[in-house]
Length: 521
Image (cartoon, rainbow, N blue to C red; front, side, top):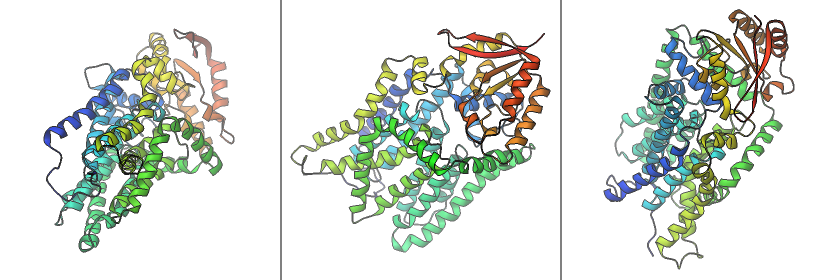
């Protein structure tokens, strides 16, 4: 009985007819649009708010790091700046760009999968990724850094497979791989873990005569590509007087951030996130585990080396900080989707399904993999409004009402007024189009087990006092009050408000309140 092939394809010519290729790509794009288009107007969440605010301030000749603290690399700010330049509503434009990037990642993953698998399995892997990446369980409707990072890592890994296929040495592919991984780390630093894992897998992919030279070429040229990309960014900030702030925010603070949590708290964070993920991904994990075992049992271990290394690098990236926020798990989705699709293929050849026609087995495997993710997405696609959707995804937050609150603030302030948000709601500043009274547009970097927390909070208090904010939004985040956190800024804010401001409360359309303070006249 015919079965699909598995393994690295060494042929240049496609074994997939062009018409079928077209319809496979069309299916990936259509599914991406179907799952994301209904929620293109979903309100921004916290991380999106910080990226949007800094992108908006770029038009005021301001820079991230120098003028506004942020621990993310700079790529996301310019991606958002591109979105804000589109002739649509800003929230719609941000998610439109994310949808286009997600579709591109699905298409790239399809072409990558075709170097390992048969036609149907490659398309299944891409469609599974498309569904999982839009899943609310991984906060997939938000335009987070992971969505941009994944496109670049998939393209880079696809280039490496092209390098493996190339019979003669060629510096173009290794150099381009480095450039792509350099760009990927400019969206999120943990993409570097995928790069290192990829380098570790390459000796297993190359034939013995090419192993040493091919691996060395990839290592050296990809390092050069990464150095070129990051060197250009470093020069950009250096000549604008922002290099020390860039290094501190993106590297120094992140090292402190990623090492500040004890092991017990990391474990609790992991358990808290895995439970909701399991509701839509349990079957996918089982199939992915099956695929990993099946790849290991093959006489040709190249498939196992490549996907196993990719999975391991992604696990390291997800675990780096220890917070295990749901959107971190998007980094795992490409290798998990590939392994799950291969696992479905392996199971379809088992004795339970051996009497079934090939097409029937494929349908059974695809249905088993896609059922739970599609059920998880169904109410968000068909029933929830954007405001309802964001409240279901982030039930302990009020992201759905920040636009209403921002309109109140915009109406009661002048264009050049400064706003102090005692909290972590930068999306409020973006919606109101008002500048922050402090470079910390969200205060969580000041509240942690950092050795300089007291000095940073003192400097922030002085900065706020000198800015004379017209309005203070009082919405402290629960992370501020973790045991051991410095509370100087909390006490100072209480005193500052009592001396100079009067309280007021505004209510959203559902009577949800926001506590404000305005200057005493």
